[in-house]
Length: 424
Ligand SMILES: Cc1cc2nc3c(=O)[nH]c(=O)nc-3n(C[C@H](O)[C@H](O)[C@H](O)COP(=O)(O)OP(=O)(O)OC[C@H]3O[C@@H](n4cnc5c(N)ncnc54)[C@H](O)[C@@H]3O)c2cc1C
Image 1 (cartoon, rainbow, N blue to C red):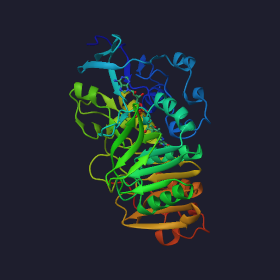
Image 2 (cartoon, rainbow, N blue to C red; image 1 turned 180 degrees about the vertical axis):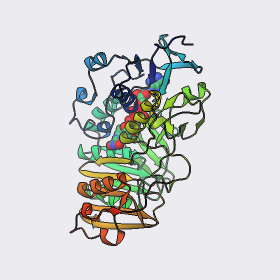
Image 3 (cartoon, protein in one colour; image 1 turned 135 degrees about the horizontal axis):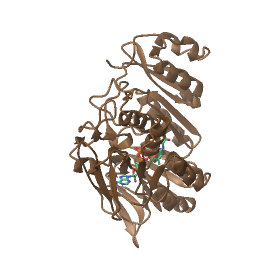
Image 4 (cartoon, rainbow, N blue to C red; image 1 turned 120 degrees about the horizontal axis):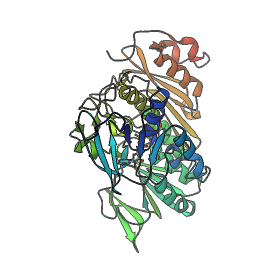
């Protein structure tokens, strides 16, 4: 165990939350040594382009990386890459972690920003060649050259990442089929009208979308996938299969530490504190309260850049002994080819929606209300609406539902005081 005050902070997981936490610690004036440990070979980088521009070959590899070696040196941050923390122990004063390569790291403060791993299909053939999923740069580097020559691509899963990859594959000229087991796309995240609009937009661009369609097996030849068998007995030919069926949070180290973990993640409070009251956790690995999640039961795990960044800031504030609750408006974007979705707030539990603009023209916004108050906006090709609502939510303001549909009036002119939409 650590025996002095100078062991510093150990941040396990060098992704979006990890780099944000380190940055926030320095911005908050914290000068203690920091070790940021990541198991991927690269310095921390942006994931969003991996399913979009990077996959299409429009984005250079080096531009994905957040900072160069000089930045880490200037900030006094020791960056360890390509080495996973495998064991960890701590007490109230600090602790010790050991990596796969045998490196021992002492710490007096600990942050877990371990992210998530892609789920695999529990099906025969899931480990065949040419069955892909994208979480890391390595994954994208494997898929990109295949996609460039693919003729028939089947994407299993109609969530954000599956649809982004489908749009990229289509833009590269492949025939694309998206399989979604439920009755609509993006079903866990968005309102039904947005699901329908997104489906129509993909179909308009030539992608086939099959709803209520479950893959039951992957068909292989010479060790690589050549098709997908569906529950209805049909078979789709494919020279590339992409699996986008969600993620599982990485909670193994938290479990080792005896922290409270549930299937959705490492349980944290509004200050990103875990159950031991000392260790913090943030980003895709963590599940916690969100004042904007009025329509969701229990703690929430959000998978977005904004959430990882904002929760990591709260975690940094906690580590410096000046906790500031994480209470940011959730926001998210998804570029599916030339279709840009922007979402602020959480539409779950809405009892009224207002459509503004024209869904068929792929330029519209959907405003969600609960108990008469604005709780979220989902916009397609309407960034001004999106920004107006995001600002309104940030200020605890609302926009009257009865005037919101008139797209000749800018939404920012309609913002008015309302009861705070955040849960008490
Ligand atoms: C392809 C793709 C596209 C996306 N597009 C969007 C988008 O358009 N908009 C948006 O808002 N969000 C998007 N996201 C989501 C967003 O990128 C994630 O929510 C965000 O990266 C989460 O950050 P994180 O730090 O929690 O996890 P990660 O970024 O996954 O970082 C966690 C890191 O910890 C490492 N790690 C785990 N365990 C250990 C260990 N024991 N030792 C060392 N290292 C460890 C992992 O390997 C990983 O590098 C996208 C995600 C993906 C994968």
